[in-house]
Length: 468
Image 1 (cartoon, rainbow, N blue to C red):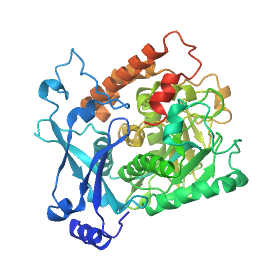
Image 2 (tube, rainbow, N blue to C red):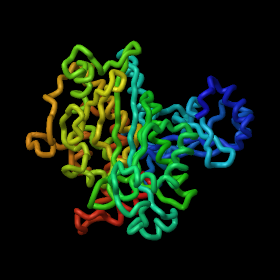
Image 3 (cartoon, helix red, strand yellow):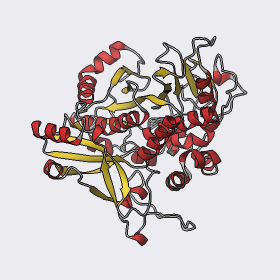
Image 4 (cartoon, helix red, strand yellow):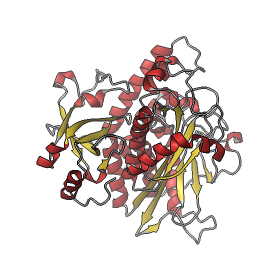
């Protein structure tokens, strides 16, 4: 990232000095896929207020790039052919500008969106939603600190060979799964380390990396950042890893589950709040060192978890992760450093005291997964909620614990009918996201009718392996 930039003029100076030729304007769609356009740097140098347009068609696209028709019974605004799919403006956030080290003389900037005709406010888009919640935290006197941990699979396949195989029976990076094995990660190092170095040069604050449970599975953990910046990091990681893998004749997958055996790919979200420059989740006077604010935030995450599962688990494939003793975070409870339940609280030091949300799959949109956790925390604090007793021991063996929705249909129903979702996330976001999920579920059910429901379908592999 160009961390020295304080204003647009400094950015333009650096672009000239580094002889950058093109700038990518990129933003997240509802699925977390990077959508955007490229412009010659001369356009930006001539007019720093340049606006890049994109059809509102993008809002209605599914993860395969095809548009859905709006609901026939809705009177609300929807992008459609009826209105001619009017344009959206891409509004660059120049604080996110960075050089792309693996592309020739290219920079990238993350964008937000506005309706070109100003006829509709696009605050339901993922980054805008997270911005609204970060602003809400500031109104309550808090600053946010968030870090993501993402798991992903790496294969000795090209984009073409993976596609030709239907993303089945691919040559995994490693023949065995050895979680935390430094021998395994050392063997992987000639491939993984160059990717890591370029990601860090790209401005990705990687703090820890390791081999994980799956064949060829990697996990990258990132340093704490404000919520929106952490969303940017998770969003860009998927985009960047796929491009870097392709340049090295490799193929990366972030989908939740590629095989019914073994571990799937998850996304753990570590969140804390700070007040007046001090960690709000730590209290030295408490026996367990966990502050009242932390416990209220935990209670809010638990109270919203069923309603918000759809944001953590956005595809039918997401729900295949949910199995006992696979560390999937589908049981509704919290504990002290307990990985068998959805919400884990950690007190290493006062500054690192945090909540770790463990429900999300690797296929989740990072902006939306972070937003779900933050909205839950703020709800708990505002409402002064009290959490249930913490869970000690094996949560999977605790018959009193409820599960989050275990199918996408159940999750859609809980989300769409949720008063809390509409209140905390906004009615526009709920209607847009619900519609995309209903369409996704319909396509899944049509494609898998009559198939073994326990087997991961060819349709899932073809749809999600190279998208989410």
